[in-house]
Length: 181
Image (tube, rainbow, N blue to C red; front, side, top):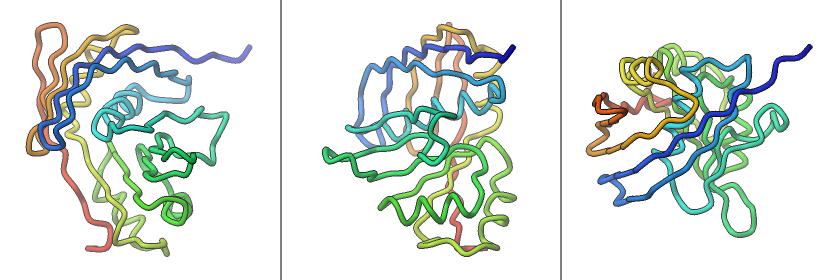
């Protein structure tokens, strides 16, 4: 018997002072059996960090050729392709041809990801944005992960503060340039 996805609901009060975005978000995320809790948390954070009109999660495993998260214009064209984790160079190359902006959020070692991608041919590699989310922030959120989670998320100067059930976690989001290796 095949394992099914577990649904998670994140109720987020987003205050992004860097971009002047203040929203109440309700995110429903399906966590596949092959997906780690760290990946799930990073996916939810990336959605919040990039929140804009037209943002949506992909259909996941049903659409492997689509970005994990995309921001589309009114015609349906992908404006921003957002991937999570450690996508391979072929996927990043395809993304860079398909969208004006490509962003990768990782919860893993960003130096290894940059080295792996820099060794390959990627369209507009210098424009690819790679962000590492502080591992202690992700780990702290994973420790408190429940199927229904209410949190306050504040972003200021690329520093992230998350309040969950009275506990405050914080960490930084660091950009790693792809072409600098």
